[in-house]
Image (cartoon, rainbow, N blue to C red; front, side, top):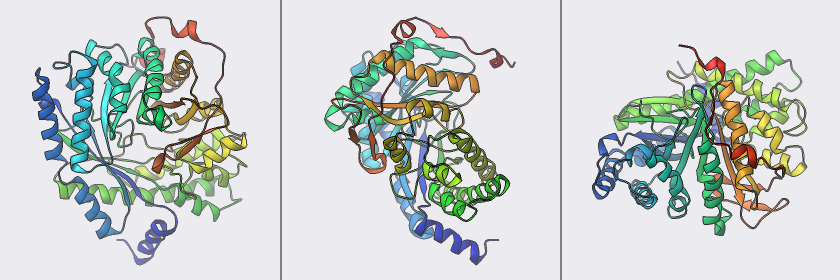
Length: 454
C-alpha cells in the first residue's frame, strides 16, 4: 500500500526536483500497410497512424491532470521505413514522400515527434535501404517532426563500414541542408550499434519487427531527484551512496510504471516496457553531470568520471528493474551535451573533451549524444568517430550511438542554439588527424570472437 508519506514525497519530487515522465511513445507496426503502389502506401500509412494514435495525446493529458505527473512528450515510433517502403520506392525522393506523410500524420494527432525513418544495415544494405539513407538530408530538412536512425553494427554481425562511410557524408549533407537553423537536422538523426527494438526516446525510436501491432513504451526521468537525495548523504560510504541511488531509482520508475499501465488501459494497447534512463534537460537542477559532481567530482570529465558514471548507471538499473514488470529500451543514464546544463558547463570549463565522452560511453546508456562540432569537419572524420563508437558497442555487447552536429559556419568557441529540450551546445574541438584511408576500405569489420554463442 502507498502511504501518505510516499504520496507527499512524490509530490515533492514533481514540484521541486524536476521529476517527470519524459515520454509516452506509441509504437505502431506499418507492416500491414506495405504495397508496391506509392500512392496507396502513403494513404495506408497515414490512415494507420492517425487511427491508432488518435487518442494518444488526449489520454496523456488526462493522466497528467488526474495524477499530477508531468508527461513531457507524447511520441510515435513506426516500423523502419527502409523495410516498409522497399516495394514502392524507386528513388530517394519516393522515400522523402513517405517522410512527409509521417510528418503530416504526426501533426494530425498532435505528437511531439515521430521516429522510425530508419534503416537496419548492420550487415549489409538493400537498394531500398541505401535509397532511404541517401534521402535523409532532404527528408529531415523538409519535415518538422520526423526523426531518423540507422543501425550500422551489432555484436553478432560486426560493423558495416560501407554504411559508416556513407553516414559520415549524410550527416554532413544534413547539416548543410539545415544550416539556417544551426544544422538542426542532425539533432534528429542518430546512428546505432545494437539498436533496441523498443526504445521510446528520440531520435532513435523505431518499432521493431518483433513487436506487436501496437505497443506503449514509457521513458522516465529524474536526474534532479537523484541529485537532491545525494546531497543528504554527502561524504558517506559507497555502500550508502549506492543504496540511496537504488531506492530513488525504484521510486522514479514506479511513477513510470503507473503512467504506462494507465496509458495501456485507457488506449486498449498492450504495455511494452519502461525505459529507466535518467534523461536530463537544459533546466537548472535536472542534470546527470550535476549528479557526478555531487558524487565527488569538481566537474564532469575530471579523473574518476567514468567510474562515477558506471556506479550511477548500475544502481539506476538495479533499483529500477524491481519497480517495473518489463524493463527495456536503453535504460541507464544519458549524457547528451546540449541537453544537460552541467555537461555544457563542463565543456566550457575545459574539463570535458570528445575523447573523455567516448570513454564514458563504455558505461552509460548510449554514446556521443547531441555534440556540436565545427561545421568544416570532414565526412571521413565523422565516419571515424562513428566507427570508434560502434566498436565500443560491438565489443561490449551494449547499445552505443552517435548524434553529432557539424554546425555549418561555426567553429570552436562558438555556440549552436537548438531551443526547447534540445538546448544549446558549445562547439567542441575534433582531432584533426586524418583517418580517410581507414574509412575508405570497403566491407565490414567482423563480429568479435565472443559473439559466437550458439
